[in-house]
Length: 613
Image (tube, rainbow, N blue to C red):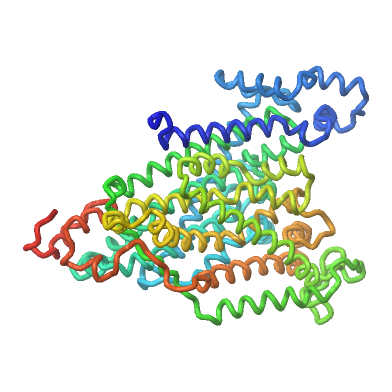
């Protein structure tokens, strides 16, 4: 029985179950929405034709809607082994070419955006490697908090309209992917750079670095070894970011009119073109599964035999604390703006004061209807920050719980991460309607995979550490090991990761509001403010910059305060430093320090009288 339910098979069963659940939910979308799919398809085919009973009956007969959702879903699934994804309800063409075309565009855009993200990551990580110490990471967090669709709009205006350097819409050559790639890659690079930079300082303080420097090993080789040391638990994050850049780029694809797979899925969902929507979602889910499997292989290759032999030694978690003035200044600035805005009326319309610049009467100017931007910013803070915090906390708790069930977590996270938030938003909105609650539920359903994957990777490495092996050897109870070593070692970095993702969750909520699936007008939600101000960002940039700067302040505050949130020094699974890196240690202690054998330079420093065990 144990062989039948190995971890690999449990993960595969979880993936299949989640895949079936998502496809079934997508197949039921026309019936969940409460709208007549025949009428929606008729409107998509011909907006001028009246929805007479005869016309609707002809549509139902043509699409086979009278047979019910289960029959339609079974018929669609039966064609998958033959590579038949069905026929579009709107255009009448085969779905497969449309899905392949959209996926090719999205993969090309993902590659370009990932290149930009890696450049930004290198720019964030390079100072840590050069100085040998970390930073609080507020700047990288602010980069990660930049709204992608606002960055896309600004890049379109500056580089496309004002300077005329690059095309502003369409997809006809490599030059068309530059602006979308920058808009997607800069926030992703800020996130990845912060994760790597947060993990590097403890590694650079380890004894082996000092020994390698004393042996004359070059800085480049030490930096490469340090990066290899910290990358294994972060490799799944790179994979998840890559998938997110493919299916989660709907807002950017909308701004630049890029015919990617995300925009294709959004258009199919709006027109209730069920076969095209199912084909697009299936392609995204398959991409997520392939990327997750590739990330797992790369991670195991990086760890090498140390994972199998329980020879890992994890670095101590020592987050770099910013100067107390940094979070204090950011917090006071944000609270002042929110508090001042709460004293003002966010709903009063004054058409005579449209798009006014900041003044004493309107400190942050007015929007297109003459409403006070400061007032709307302050009143929208509760729904934006409060909702994002609640979603982030729920995702953190779920991630820590699933981190100890890696087979379940890995299978479910691959599916959840591959599903774009906009698709989840459409499915949730079909049941509960568009609004803040529905958007929060949609984001909560998809916010835990990155944290869960990080937690699962850390749990696996902690359990394979030499120190925990010693704890078991001296008779420590499983509960003692769990509560005093494993959980503290996992909870601290995952909590900092969750705080780093707090602005991203707020951005996901904002993106759903931007696409009409979140808060509805006239609610002063920050995502809605960004959407409303996008049309006149050239004439009144303050209306769009105010919520964007507020999100950046929130990101900087969250990250710079994360290190102060810990009650005391983090416990670590590593033994005390005096026992972990000196030349008097056993040879096996060095053998798989990073998952690969140490260099001859370090081996030369080991005392010759001590036998290698």
